[in-house]
Structure formats: structure tokens, C-alpha cells
Image (cartoon, rainbow, N blue to C red):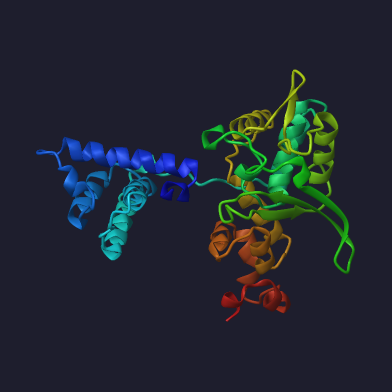
Length: 331
């Protein structure tokens, strides 16, 4: 029962880490006895982490440790590791991450990027229509790519866990201003695995308009109410849009347009930056992206264009700072 605490993909990641730990224990001279592996001692865990330092990235080492801890939790074995020492060790490993294990920064996808690759999609093609609709919807709703595509490694498509056609509601007028909004219900998300969450977008000007893209997709593919929202027709049968196929097709278009390759999270980063550059208040963007903390402000340091108006000798946006900036920045 306790193993269900984690998603399938997380269990697989932790399982790999646990395997590495046991292999390391087996290769010791003499091998570490089973009785010493659980509950694991602080000294043994530090020895294990020392062997990882300089060879693996900090995130990999963390997953190895979390895998060992999850193993303890699943079998109701006490976890007697000092968290302060563990945190210090993981910080040290992060600083010792070899250059080959450091991921390059993911450049954000921009509206211009989408508009440049748009001509390389044939919206009369079922697959292209589905991909372009998923691309624009993910971007403008500040969603994670995995929330609008299917990853077979995490399990097959299921209406209980993936967005469906019936999960879309287009409201002609919302609020006192009567503005149109389209809402998508995500049955399960990273931060709301049980009750799900809702994301929204509105019509935009130009080729990146998500409404036009979605309408083109629905006209060509016509998924049923319980089908994957971005399912596409292949030889008369509907196929859920898979993440790998999505990225492959987008990057084919990017190559033809002479642009760099896109990575999944680049869409969310790009959407955040687009709204901030439009002058949308930080707290509103935080709500749109469903962040519980201010972690999203990490993106601010990546874009001088966002911060530039606020750091001038005479701030050109001074009259709006109290509205636009988070309270913790205004002080």
C-alpha cells in the first residue's frame, strides 16, 4: 500500500537508485551485510554518497538517497539518518557535479519562436494539427508539457489521469468584463495528484493563437468526449498524442525554421516570461502557473528584459511597482 505514495515514474527512478545502492554494498570488501543496509546508518549512507561525488550530478545522487529512503518507508523501517548531515552531503555533491553531468540551460520558447515554426505545420494533417494545438495550449496556459501529452513510460492513456475532450469548457464571458476564457481540467497533476487542477487561456493575436489551433485540431481529428484531448487519427484510429512524438515533430519544424531545439519545460518558462514582459503582475502569473511558492521567480534572473524597467536610476515603471511586484520585493 505504501508504495502507492509515489507515481509509477517516481517508483522507477527510486528503484534504479535502490539498485545502485545494493550493487555498491555488494561490491564492498567485505560486502555490506543485509542487516546493515536497513535501517541504514548515517556513516554507511555518507560512504555511499562519497562514492557518488564527482561522478554523478547532485540530482542523481538525491534520487539515489530518496530511493533508499522510500525503500525504508515502504517496509516500515525506521529512517535514522540525520537530515542536517544528509543535506550538507547532498549540497557538497551538487557542487562537485562533473561538467559532463550538468544540463545546459533551457532557452525559453517565445511567441516569435512559435510564429516562426507555424508555417511548417500542415493543419489539415491530423498529426500536425494535434501537435500544434498542444503546443499553443501548453504555452498559453503555463502548463507542464506532460499535462497535455501522454508518456507511455508513466503509463498508458487513461481518462482518469489525462486531459480529455470533455475536460474542455469554453466560456463566452467571464467576470464583470465579460471576457472569453477556455478552461481545461487536468485530472491529476504534480501538485494535485488526487483532485486535479484547472488551467486557462484566451484567444491571442497572430499564428500562435491557441483557440484557432484547437479548433483546427478538433475539426480534423474530432476526438470523443473520453478520448485524449489531443488524440490524432492514424489510419482511421485515434492515437493519444505522446510526448516523444510531440517533441520530435516540433523540433523537425524548428530545424526547418533555423531555430534551436525545444525542450519540454521550455514552453512553461517561455509562457511565464511572455506574460511578465506584458506587464502582468507577478502574483497573477504565479496564480496562472499554479505555483504555491515563489520558485517561479527564478525565471526573472534569466531575463534582463523583465527586470530592466525596475532597475533604472529613475524606474520607468515606478507608478506600477506596488501593483506589479510581489509584496516581498516592494519592501
